[in-house]
Length: 115
Image (cartoon, rainbow, N blue to C red; front, side, top):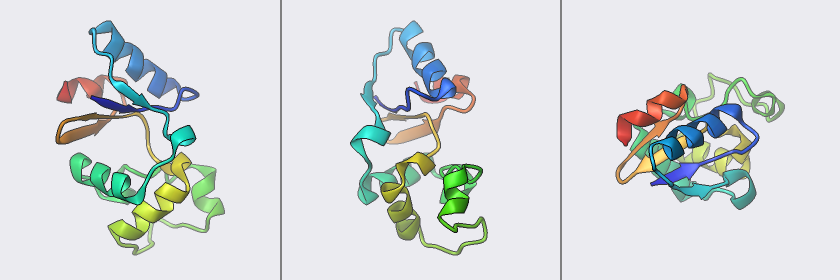
């Protein structure tokens, strides 16, 4: 399993703790340090079965507004993937990937749905 983790985020820390308490030690990707490729973001969209503005992007983050983005922007998934890869702080977290499925851990207990 792969865990997209931001150690500064309480929900991300809680999700990792939840996994560890169940004896699960996923590969951790600190995406803010390591970055994200556009292909990786597109892959996450597919595995999450989610539209970018319907949960993948942190639209309430100040960076979203600073970049001049809007909930009404009609960008393609590829365009949103580019935005996220260039601004990884916009990625909702945490995300757990288990084979061909992924889930956003908000609340952290949601991670249990794909374990």
